Image (cartoon, rainbow, N blue to C red):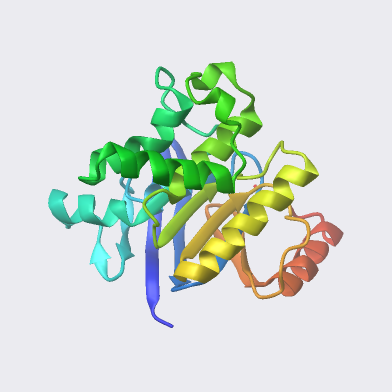
Length: 244
């Protein structure tokens, strides 16, 4: 299948605390991988490390065989065009309208004319059912759920091959969750994207084909199919262990 992303022996210290201690992770092309970890285990930091937004204190991250530590600015820029990010708090630009937030990657990374930008933004916003009456509203004026929908639309706007999703459905209702999971699944299959999701709660209805990694004590403690990891979690609960 080919390795898209590989983290080797990652270390990271924050405020005097070792967050990651020799973490290793491999993602194959076209797979969906879910990292399950407790609050404070470093899930959001890990996404930023793997996406090259921050640098590790030790170890390496490679995307498609290219080391993020040694790649030129031009190469990193080209790589980021192929990535999509959704952060836990949606991370939309606070003084920019919802529509302009979604359009930003197209306006920054492409030479498309405004009519094409408008068309593509409308398509992606439609997929996630972003309420178009909020086009000119700033993020603080809309609900968290609507901000997450807009953030997902923005993440997919450049048709990325690698998606980093931080708690993409946390705090949403069942209908919204089902919609988002359906859209992401269809997109992943259509472009054969690699998707990394971090979450603190076991996703309901998780397909058996997904791989799951359990994050704790600064590393991936175990990984396997959803069925295998559910059994592993039960064993951890039985013996009083927990992810942290």
